[in-house]
Amino acid sequence: MSNNIKELLSQLLPLHHAEQERLKKEKKEGKSFNVFSALNMCSDEVRLHSRLLATLLNPKANHGLGNEFLKLFLIALGLPEDYITYCKEQIVERPIGEVTETNGGRIDIILEDREHAVIIENKIYASDQPNQLLRYYNYGVKTFGENNFKLVYLTLYGSDPSPYSLGGGHFEFIKLSYAQDILKLLEDFVPTQPQKPVHSTIEDYITIIKQLTDQDMDTEYQQSIINEAIDEKYIDATLELLQLTKQIGDALIEKYIIKKLIGFERHKDDNGALWRDLNESYAIVIKTDDRTYWRKVWIGISPKNGYEQPLKKLDCFTDAPTKNYPYGWSWISDNANNNWHNPAQYPAIKKEEVLRWIEKKISEIETCFKI
Image (cartoon, rainbow, N blue to C red; front, side, top):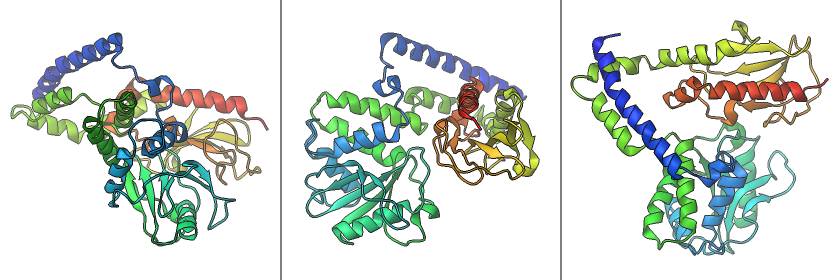
């Protein structure tokens, strides 16, 4: 390691310690308390995100905001602020009939009055369902008319829907993100309104969105690190460290996840997946389609040697069975966007939080797996 890298790290260490002390102080004083974290709801797509957003957007809710947030939301979609003037029930999780290839399902959020509607498909970590957006689009056309509704695809980072969800259809929809669009709406909205009890809820929710989108580092602390890193004396060392980001991630993954997973073996013929036998016919599998960067990693039970079993979802998994995973499967850490090579995730790997999640899931699998 070059002397400049050592010196840069020595300069950053006091900043890190000061930030840790600040966080400890805030925790002691109760400033870091967040009701959504306390209730373990941070990534709950329905009970937190859909319901809270729908409540804030509903002028008839008892938050005391009237239609002010709804108007800003409509403007953010590129619509007139009076595109929707009030909201009919049921706003959240509205059933629209039995699921077929082109119709039916359950809409996450729907805002409608007598003339227009906004249909929102809300994705935190859940994966797309077959023909999902196509079915909701068809419902919009049939119920409101082709030109009287907007379909919104809301995700953490404004991702594109999968072809699986579009079902081969070609139709208009609006992409929206929590990381930029919803966060900006909420942050811009709070200072413009007279303080009401709901504002503390919004502040807590802003914190949750920042955590989910890796934007929760204290601004002053962040700027201090940046100032040190781009200092003329250390810029070369900073660039050298940045070039080693993947190698650092590889070392962390190997040391704090893979080597500590007891009984797992790498299968080179299965894209480097990790396998551990459950019995003679089945194995627990931890796998990613992007082995190089270990992102979007999942865990499931897979048949060995082509042994097949009727599809039957186990309670320990969140996603539906497939041919390769006949008992269902789950994203690692319940996060469809998990990325073991994202530097923001390195602390969780180093503290073995990811490992503990996997070990707990393995224990659940062993408990509920019975043939």
